[in-house]
Length: 128
Length: 157
Image 1: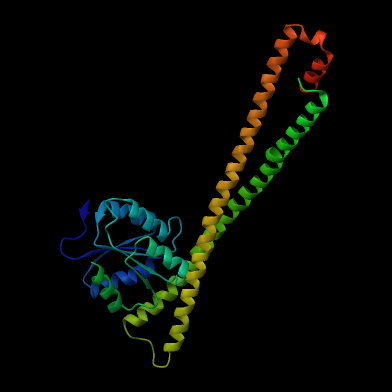
Image 2 (image 1 turned 120 degrees about the vertical axis):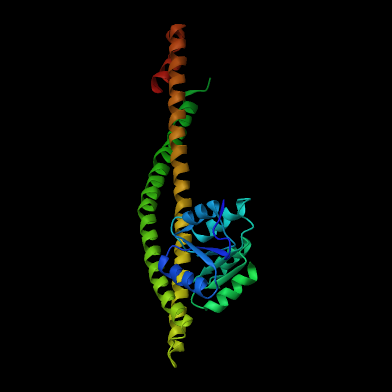
């Protein structure tokens, strides 16, 4: 397993809509100074997690093929991954979804359209 | 040995069970399979379309917040757009739940179909055993002395 970056704290964004992921990537790199990688969907996200080392995962919830809850389960079941902190970044606000996310050990849940760059960076720094 | 009326009743019941499990249940399971097979990709496409729409809306709101370009007096409009994105997100989540339910339904239908096939195999095995018993009894000359038994095997041949 290789370190994504020796200097900056590395974050993996797992998101099926690359355009919104690019927006967060730009903000987190420019303002937060993080090293960001994007995985297009849950399956690619797990593959990247297994091959590189990340300080934190920003995870979307609704994704085709493998959704965020399935990714969280897989992370929990993997000895090498279960200690990586995960923040869920989603537009889903239903109680049912949030309860499941919390039960699966996510550190926090943030709503995409509610969070601003400073708030997002503060939440990330609070976790890593 | 059981008398004819018991044989007939048992036969009828077996036929009925065979019909219900082997045909009716299989029909239902097949229908479930074909419906869920058709529905799953359509649901996935719908989720992808909604996802794309929600993403564009989110992107607009997130970028505006980042560079403070929300015009004065337009904050409420952005709030409405943001709420719409959340509603889309929740709808997507419900659709996702539906796709998981469809997968479960497909697994159930598959199990019913497999059981139907297993039952068919068991009935065929039983028929083969019956043929073997008949052949054995025939070779011993049992049928020539017992017309009722001959009749029973003739019926079940």
